[in-house]
Length: 487
Ligand SMILES: NC(=O)c1ccc[n+]([C@@H]2O[C@H](COP(=O)([O-])OP(=O)(O)OC[C@H]3O[C@@H](n4cnc5c(N)ncnc54)[C@H](O)[C@@H]3O)[C@@H](O)[C@H]2O)c1
Ligand SMILES: N/C(=C\C=C\C=O)C(=O)O
Image (cartoon, rainbow, N blue to C red):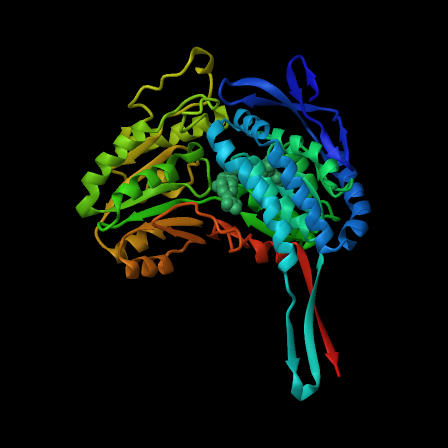
């Protein structure tokens, strides 16, 4: 681990080698607000070097059998798992999330991403049809696209980066990945495992830095025909514009304004703790987090009281505290943005029942400059309010009453996003009916964030374009060809 003046110094990883950069940017520890790491401020030159390496590595890597590539992915998964604790500590320090979440979700899921695609690549099949009246058969073949550009956000750094790297290289592509400049450490640590896992130089290249500099250089490079992006909607718009002249293949996984719909026959013993988690896990910084809770009128007051009591028990603490439920938000700017939403809601006449501006946050002296915020519950708020329409991406959730099924479906759908929803009811017919009518790429009923990696993941409307999953990622990272044989 290279360090200068006690700061962690990251390097780009290109062609199997760690390379210094001409300039660096500061990266902050969200729990203290202090600079603790320096991240390469890469640009066009670094992307060019990565393209040269990825291009050279492509013929040999894409010619390997799926079985051979699969073995490499399994090796990488094992190595990552052997270092689970150090990766979890690094992710927690870099991102601000609790060590418990990093240890039980982020890093195990990163390991699982490699194992899952190591397995699923062995089970992909082609299509074949007959046209007997014309004496023809038709079949498809798939080939890796080439060099894939992978751009990921700061909220689930290694989890989301490996969710892209694993399917891309399993399908035979070589990749250039750009993690968020705010959370680059675990991606850099992973590079140290690649050689031992048997990943040849140039197959995985990682260039660090900001979106406008290195992200745009990657998206605009003519030799990178496929871009998989997870992040915000405004950035997706920019990426779409930049890649349009090259007709690039794009996968866009974007934000959400996710509703929870709670009917009067819901099992509140399960619903309340799960909805607390779906609202506040990872400081509310998960694209799938609930931020609008619709509760049927007959149980509204009871729900509100119990939910606020539970929110007050959701402990905010320093990320390394294993008993903390919530750590620090990602940055000072983001904390300000989230707080501003609460201020705007108050100005519109909404009530803040707990959290920001109501309860006192107690932190050790060293962490008082960190980016912490209490879980915040807002009510008496109109559906048209910015807090009910825009993605806040922080520990803020709004609770409103509803009368009936038809009304709540219409209100839940009345936002530009369509990523994830939860429905709580013990009436099986209603659960199916409502799930079908929601404009949402994912609907969890009587649960949240139970992931089946085989099935399509992604959003409708402004929440994205395309899906990720066993079949979907394979199709995205390959080009299909239809061959007709006349006999
Ligand atoms: N749907 C999903 O699966 C999913 C998952 C996680 C996060 N998200 C969304 O991501 C957002 C939060 O992440 P964020 O703040 O890091 O998003 P962001 O769009 O600011 O950044 C995401 C990535 O894009 C890069 N980037 C920024 N500008 C760029 C540009 N002009 N060209 C190329 N790359 C650029 C960033 O450096 C970063 O690596 C939220 O909207 C959240 O909902 C969606
Ligand atoms: N892509 C996935 C989750 C995204 C979360 C966003 O913050 C996944 O579980 O595969």
